[in-house]
Amino acid sequence: MQFPCRTGSKDMIIANWKMNGTSETVKTWIEQVSNKIEIKPDKTCVFCPPVCYMEFARDLIRNQNCQIKLGSQIINSSYDKALTGGLSATMLRDINTDFVLIGHSEQRSYLREDRKVISEKIINAIEENLRVVFCIGEDFDVKEKNDTQKFLSEQLEVLQNISLESVVVAYEPIWAIGSGQVATKEYIDEIHEFIKQHCKKFRYSEGDVSVVYGGSVKLENCEEIISSNFVDGLLIGGASLDPEIFSSIYNLS
Image (cartoon, rainbow, N blue to C red):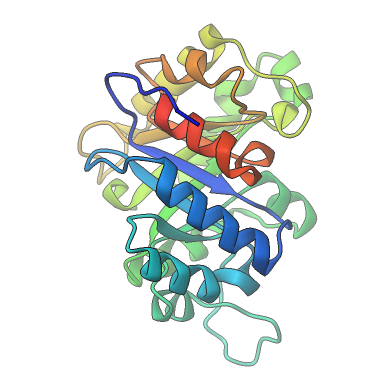
């Protein structure tokens, strides 16, 4: 099957598998994606499987001799070794993890993560030379009240004393995650430009921070989203589970 390519690539395409997959589907995904996509120096492919498959995925990536980067969906804020089920930044680095998702709305909601916890996670990750994918986004009520920019600016404040070279911001409007609803290109342009401009106010900002878009990204809408000059890549959930669809989205970007 041939996958079309587009001139002018985006920085990063991330597959977030959430709580999906088996060892067999991880194996199939890595084998197929590594054969279908053409990794370029200016475009990164990141695979975030469930944590129980991360070492397995790492070994498969090595065996395929491909440039897929390994990402973690979780990290703990504490270095306290007396934490049952904990996963530290040191452990992630030990298994050659490259990226970690922090601040995802599902983690904020289900685990009640607050600003302090998220800030500690980011600092711990950067200290271990992990690159942070920092997720932000508003719910439907915030959007309806026209408070999106105010809400996002408050979420972004955890980055004010952080080197943004180590951070990618992932804008995922909560009302679009898994709902089938997708923000319009005009809305995405407006919010991504706002994020980039807002981050320039921070102490350690040098140039534009990379901002990727997530929220019901699929093959049918990815070209319009990535055509934006303010979108630096995609964070893909459900559509990333299918290696052919993910590869096609990657090659279109």
